[in-house]
Image (tube, rainbow, N blue to C red; front, side, top):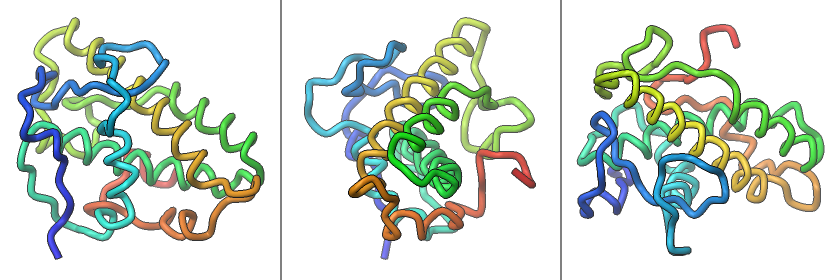
Length: 176
């Protein structure tokens, strides 16, 4: 069974490095264009997560796939953090902290997929990329909490994926 790829690869989005700068249905500020309410990259990442997380290899078919890969890795990090959260409110707090925490960008030593992403060309692009990732991380956190917490308790059908590693990679440093 092949991995799921982003449907946004067919469009010709603006690029940030070699990633697509895609519209997002969000109220968080950032460089992503405001979505029109239809399916966006965050919806796609959440929809395809359970299938894609099992793959050790992933063929990149376009710039939107790089965003999908990053979000898949980030969802795994979110689920790891949510394992400690017993209520939806705890999960929201933890996702807010994780979404705003510092993280490595492509080209920096702590970024797990440096071979697949081009590093920012200059300081302005670096700032824009950091803001884009932060905006995506915040939106993923909010939407994931809504999916994971059913009746104020974490769903075992989501939490069982917390130990999985997409492409045997992790956004967090070893031991975290």
